[in-house]
Image 1: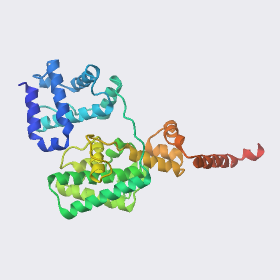
Image 2: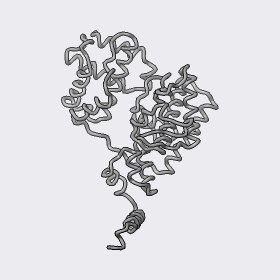
Image 3: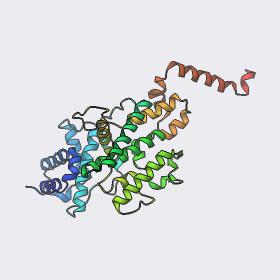
Image 4: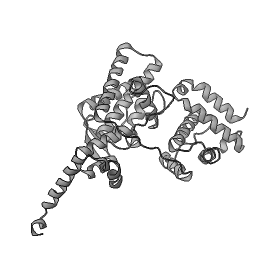
Length: 337
């Protein structure tokens, strides 16, 4: 047995609980070990670096026809990050995923191997979002009343995070990774204001309460108070493991299946993007200034027009025409013309 195979088996044995919830990690770590054997690096652990990981992705993309999309590449990287986090924590090997810009690294791989981007699938309507939130709140109340074991606690923690993520997305529909990186010091006034994308967003009282309760729960579990620079979702999940915004798609699937919104199938994720798309569509239909929508979402005008304004109902277009003409008529030169 090679050195890297031995490390892999230790990881599988010592991280049983983690791998119960991260089913794909085993498959991706096995893929990595198989590549190392092909490259003759299975007994040279200290030679392996991020470049080797990149070459591994290239091998499965170009020669095996696997890892063809951004999402599968990200799943592969998340598994290897977990693997090396374990090796580092147990003083077996240094973590090769430190001191670098993870987001930039992923973008470079996407461009280099021409990985396809995921298609953002539609959007949730307002009533659908309310239905999902209400069903989730009911499940969380039941969990508190009935008590829960370790596995139930993991589900409860996922719901705490999903509740915050969904509600924050609805009032500030920024990109998933932007919301996932929100820090404690991005909030003001006892969680009444959120600074995001250089805009101060007022937070409804109910969401402020949810945030405070989630932080208090995490402080109790972590045995320490949250610091100003702590990322809120990372802190909440810290006692269970490492939070990544990619996990949100898995947890969203769990939630939708648990509340019976979708049937249980073999699929492993459900994209959270339709929540954001729904929030943006509602802003568009409410005739919010496109400049403001672009600012809070980070979406450029051309994409906003193509993806959202292009599907407006005729009555909204009539309203738009009327207001454009009204704005033009207010100019001083209009009467002269």
